[in-house]
Image (tube, rainbow, N blue to C red; front, side, top):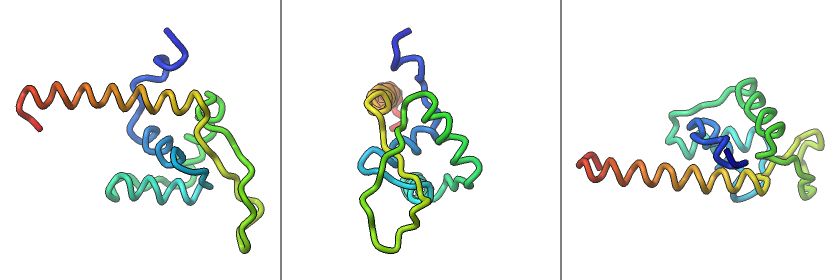
Length: 111
């Protein structure tokens, strides 16, 4: 099993967390808001649930903690996260896997 496929399939909530930091580094609250928006309001992560995901994704090497640009009024205690190179590869692989599933569903007339 290669380094990427060991993480597949990715749980939908985890996939949403990874996508939340795919375009820019975000802090926890920003991740929660992105997940809520991307899920159409169906996934509302609590802080405990979110930070368990973040800790595991950091431990697995899919996320990295980064130093943010200093923004006036920003709380200096906030931690920011972004996708690691491995995390980006996992998102690509999961996206491809999901695309293939949708194609199969389409063949059956469900989409």
